[in-house]
Length: 122
Image 1 (cartoon, one colour):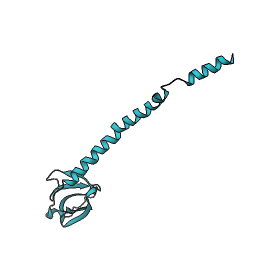
Image 2: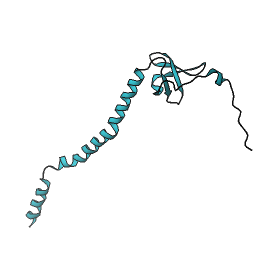
Image 3: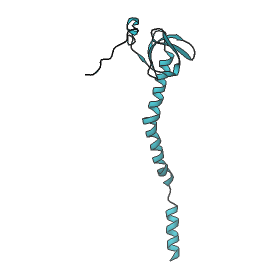
Image 4: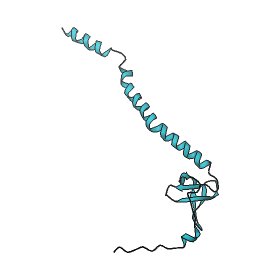
């Protein structure tokens, strides 16, 4: 009677194909992560590199810090950006978030010297 139980145990342990079935969920999870997370992030990084390499003097940009300005000088790693009349910042190329359409930045010298008065509530 003990031979009956031993032969059943050997039969269960000898079944093949369990290794591929066990790895299949891991492969599926990797494929989902690749298409939902990794690939879109690589695509955005490539677009950002192309945007930074295509910058020219006179382009209007927004920095990662939110400063809106016009590119005045381009070096290898740094840009000089005019953010207001007579105010220029030197920033790294990677600190540029996006390019803006032409005409977004308006440096009005006459308006920059005027101060607005705040009205007091009644």
